Length: 113
Picture (cartoon, rainbow, N blue to C red):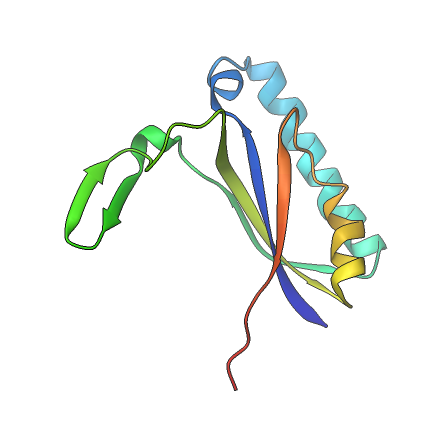
């Protein structure tokens, strides 16, 4: 099995205005996703939601700035690190990630020998 990172991008403004009921619906959807991963023969090794980009600090060479490095409609809001048989399996799993109106990016994790 190989490891893949699923990066979840979504509209921060929509998340910021979500009601407690909507947050609960998202929690239930992510819990369901975790169960689906196991049913498909994969494994979640890690995963977390991230604080908004307004809490980010960007470092570029010797310059440190508050906030994200660029204005964007969709921002990285969370991630999963999964184990999957191959990229096709990782993509099958990733299509099930609750993502609202956003998208996910799937990237293999580099292994150094």
